[in-house]
Image 1 (cartoon, rainbow, N blue to C red):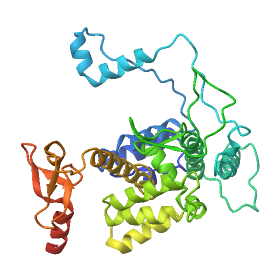
Image 2: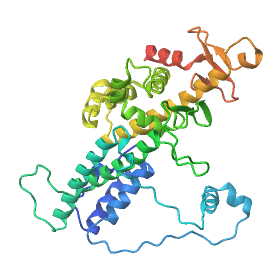
Image 3: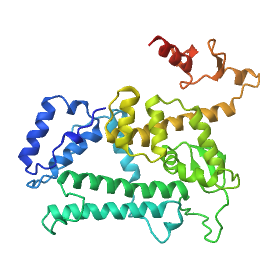
Image 4: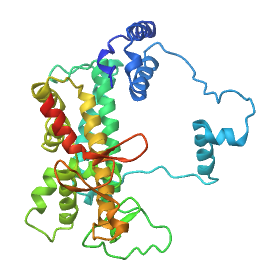
Length: 365
């Protein structure tokens, strides 16, 4: 997918100038190639112009009556019903991070240090650009509107990471039957969505890509701690993650991104490595998207496949054997699943497994 943010000139401050630039990008057909998240950034680019003085009115749309069934079948209806179900007469407290309470979470203090640094840089850029303070000639950071924008986005992203990290390392608050004096368990539970592998109270969900991403983000540091120490609380969890990493089918580009992000390589360096690998050009932002979501979600799918294999092992019984296929090319017995085999239009599985199909195409190409 295309990214439009690098094409936006944040040094243009007049609303008319920014509109002219956006119109030009639209005429070139660049906006039509962008995902909704990128278009949101274009909208922010226009709304944050210095001379914008506008009020935004949100409209529900036509008041034309429709049947209940029609409403439910539409996406708008589904969202409306979902919102109505979430309505509460009680005020829902906004989730917060307590630096005194959450300081025991591994790597959380490092994250706070990074948040403070980026927040200070954003504040500096904002105040200089707004004329509230003089530019510091001794600082390497040059306050521009583009720098201010990226510092703001970076700061927001880091603050979100606090909640992902806390959710991955701490259990949700139990309302009923809560026992404040119960000690923390020595080991962590493991689950794949609704499927419980090991129930020990504090559970890491391998069916949630956010938990997977949190584990990958701190992979190098945690592996250094737990290697050779099978009694470490995270030993079994990272062993299972390693098994899923061996199983997951990633493109050479995704495999390189995974390896380098685990090493904490900057995105700019990864972009250059990808160009050397196959000549493909990726934006810095798209590297983050692949790292955060695409790879993590593929690992989640492998986790669900692993669960299916464990509960339908090829033990000779008809009920279980019908879930397995043998690839005539490589001779492997694989679970009949979309990750292993392609499907025909009628829903039947193809004979050759996806690994062999990939290798065959590679030889032909």
